[in-house]
Image 1 (tube, rainbow, N blue to C red):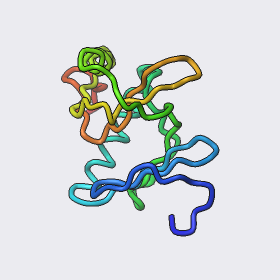
Image 2 (tube, rainbow, N blue to C red):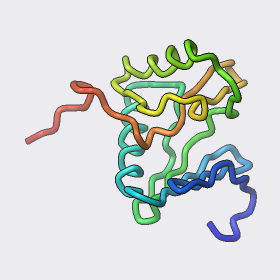
Image 3 (cartoon, rainbow, N blue to C red):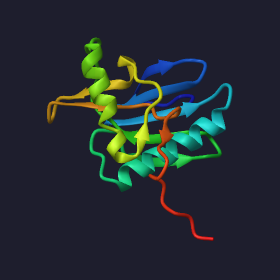
Length: 138
């Protein structure tokens, strides 16, 4: 990432660095404790949600396990405030898609102005609900 042009750093914490490119992509690099597991989980959950047609989460464009880096579509701007009842409703919308977010906080909600939709981001701690995963072949 050093010397990357055309990006805005939107998050830099012990767990991840997130940059927004000016062409609308989001680049997230995982670091810190359990980085590889959090990377793998977010990739798995985003692929699961896309396969089920969930339209209010980022779409995974690239996943690089060697660099612990994903590239996703942008789901709008971060929101400053959403009332607690609405946050509960938003995160509950994931459950029919077989996902529990496990970090239902306003920092994980964005607003997509193009269609007036609140979206949900940051699935590194999310859980696939029992029975929602495809059956593996023995």
